[in-house]
Length: 367
Image (cartoon, rainbow, N blue to C red):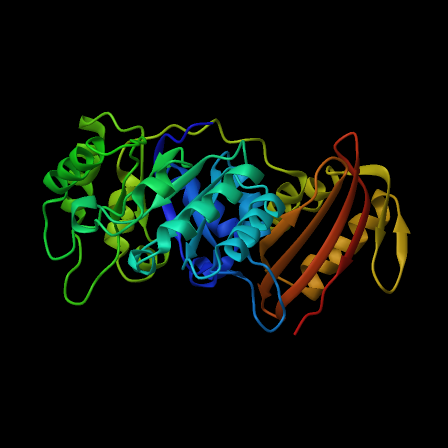
């Protein structure tokens, strides 16, 4: 599906809502974002993967965003010293993560003499292995300032041009965007421009909410179907007024919110402390399993939840941290706080039949 509406680049997932998939999904949906672009690789290495444990932060976040009807693209900073190796990791990540699109971020390293050959090799391999994946270039906003950059070699194999339309040290994004578009229209090959605006600070400079509105107004005036901002990390943590300006700008239509998954209905019922609401999610002969025992039937399940909600975690507030699985299986992780302690490691597996829980294994520790 072609990109339409507002998107955000994410650099470091742990700095975005602590990489909590549910929080990221809710925020993206409430901001009416149609797409999110997450850094998936740097050079020949995977990115947003925990170095010590090799935990990949991206899959649960991507799944949650897609659950909200939001496209997930991956972006990749490339250096050109090992184009074959960089292409291999890009192809692997796009396929493994089932991404909707791929963005190559090429900058100063590709202004070195001889890098046009590297660009051709990299893009040829990417396009050959990802023939149906939309590919975009993210680089400088004014090609006239960077004639050494191999524009043709990259854009020949791209579908979209996503210039970094950062108006640093100024507050005139509309006129800068108009110039950016004009310069790229004069180039061959021309690719549709979906610009990326500034939602970060540089030294003492920072954009203003008025800048954000001016930029997006100009995007729409030029009939550009989509635009992005860099970055979620910066605007959420340092400049919440910029996040608010992007969020409140009326543009982009998402599909209707899908019905809540049974796992989310379960968490909602826990938070409501409503044992009958919980019981309604289970089949009459459901099995509930912990490390200590297995019970069957709604009477036993009600008794378990009375203990869980009123003795183990009285007044508990529960948060789903990840959800995976489709069809008749769900795997979720959760955390909780209560007057008797907290849970940071809740792990549950649900088996479903006819949209009811027939099997529920749970494991957690109150500390």
